[in-house]
Amino acid sequence: MRFIFFLLLFVFMGSLLAQTTVNPDISVIGELDLTHLDEETTLSASSIEIAIEGYVNPYARAEVYLHKHLDGHPIELEEAVLSIERGLPLGFALRAGKFRPEFGGMNKQHLHLFPYIILPEPVAQVLGDHKWSSAGLEAKWLLPLPWYNNLSFAYLQEGISTEGHAHDEEQEVETHAETGKAFSARYSSFFDLGEVSHLEVGLSTYQLLDDSDANMAALDFKYKWRPNKYRSITWQNELLRLGPVTHVEEGGAEELHEVIAAYSMLNYQFNKVWNVGAIVDYSSDIEESVYKSSGLFVGFSPVEETTVLRIFVKQAQHGDHNPGFLLQAQLLWSLGPHKAHQF
Image 1 (cartoon, one colour):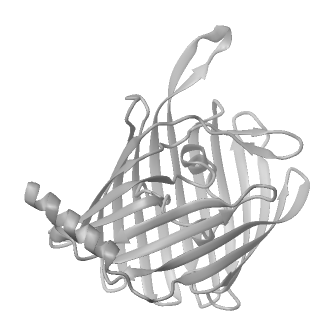
Image 2 (cartoon, one colour):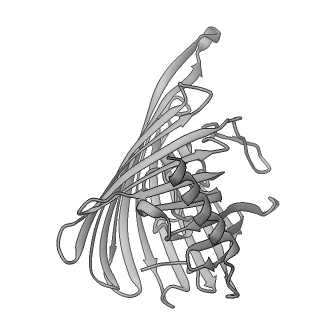
């Protein structure tokens, strides 16, 4: 064990010292949103992402993502991570810095890659509107098996905040519950089902270290059929279970509830510039009520990966409230190699 520790330390320090002179890739992704909700229509250019990416040396890659989410809000450091992707023994890889941990099928993806514009509400309830990122250290192990099997485990400075949002007439104010250090892990397997299709299955777990009741588990699977670069069918699904959440009942009594959240998304890219799809989602408990919704989306990429126009229509049912209707259009553009859309 002592030999492996010093070997890992040697490789890690060597990757930091063996700098290259290659300039990093710098990209900007902009967003314009038109939203119609509850008989009110708003237009906003509310999101800008700046990506700085490049190889530190042949073994390590650095990525920095800055994001401005809302007008009037400061620029946020979304990720700043060093990844050692090769050169470590036994098929290990490491990530260090601030990053999105390997948890479930959606947490690592950037929002501009979603064909349905916004996060499913049950996922936002569990992971947050902009998903979960934290300073920490993550190790990934490619298991020595005949098919692809990957095990990742991470130690994080900040756990998942499960507190929601406060609203006032002026603006939406994001509120965060105080969290402590956390541990997460994910095991995933990748199966080839033929020459043009595959299935990926993942199982994730999360635990807040100073609170044994604050835990979460996720099961995700994704099927993809891709006969060529511009045609594909993607079916992505995820089931999340959040440990007991405290509700304050009438009279001040506290009651614990388990939250089950899920979504299923089907996307069909049928040529170079068009895709269509549908998504359904469900939560057993959002603000003490059942939530479920269904939506349709369409995407048009007139200039390949650099510009994308998306339209999303959703109807949601929350508890005993009347069904809500959302119509959203989004224009994404990118400057640089980090694209608004990836085929």
